Length: 76
Image (tube, rainbow, N blue to C red; front, side):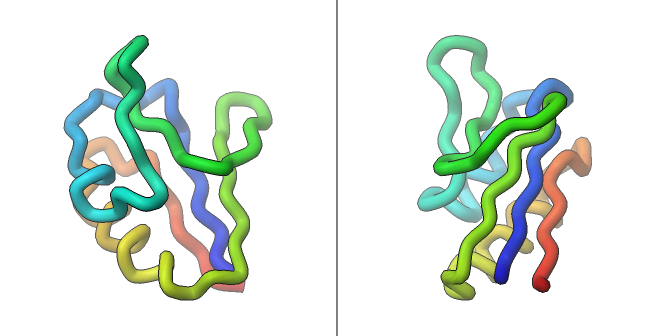
């Protein structure tokens, strides 16, 4: 399983995550911060759990590109 976690409140709106993984991230028109699609929220952390390993590499690239390091990708 692939687990992607986003700490959205620290997002600076650079858009790198959307460029790297457009199927998992999009920018909010309301506040200019990223949204992790199909994620559940708990205490400011948005988490996506998926059995689709095709998202692993794009999400890892998004995490590496993030200048504020708010994306964590784990494989369980």
